[in-house]
Length: 397
Ligand SMILES: [Zn+2]
Image (cartoon, rainbow, N blue to C red; front, side, top):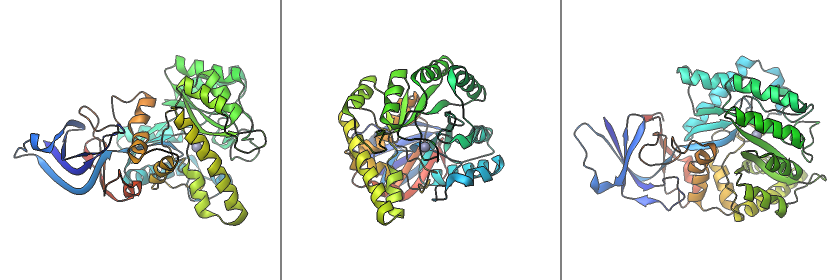
């Protein structure tokens, strides 16, 4: 049995302007045709949905989340230490459900405690847990005293990191996440690189040898340099902090990054959410961070670095149902709305090597779709007005 969907506007994920008067045909879990509406005749047993004043687009992919964290401005310490693994798993499933209701059909989890998020992904595959499809690194690999050490990934030295990558892969992680510099964890130093080049190379070599990509959290400029030199696959944040703890966009490092063709997920929404939550000097600090980061992201965009949309949901005050804001931040750093949609769909699956499977509205792709009220190509805030969501061809919202 087929479903025929007739939206007013169609954004296919390619970054091209929206199409009009199209029909999208679903059969089973696949998109089987995308044609001008007049060319497909409905059969008696087809389900026909006329969707005036709506935009149909690929289900969104949030390329950087932390499902085990609440994202409601609760300080993550001691919070994370006080929860059992079972409670964190339930939180993670809840956050995957919240994401799905907001039109996010896939999330890439960039780190939880130990195997909790791997267990959730496996439970989804067994059909006993729901929500957005989870792609997971398990936990982030971090130096002694490093960022998110409370998730259980502290390790040092070439032997140590090699062993940990092998162990993570044996538990079934989809990719490897490394903390290339410190971050918001007290005692970790965001303005300095964490792992040495030799350690980073060992991580990349071991992971690649086992068929896994490596993504690296980089706040410090020197951590970006090390990650590029080690040949990593993806960079998170790219905030270009100098040793003084302030953002200093470095065109030379950005050019190395562009030449290597490494995609960046800048996670800009965290700043925006904190600006909305704070006042006075604290707010001024977040405003400065945002300005520095937007300048860096605009610079990377001009150099042709592929930019991917990931909100860091779970972290600080970034919720799982407000991902449209990350797309809006990318737009304020110079992208058009349809390019921002591409950054949250086809550009992600291209970067992850999954473009044949999902992320676009075209025949053969998995039927993960978001239908939103309004013309999303004119205003990304229409993404909040969810009409319906399909996952694997099933109407789930
Ligand atoms: Zn993160």
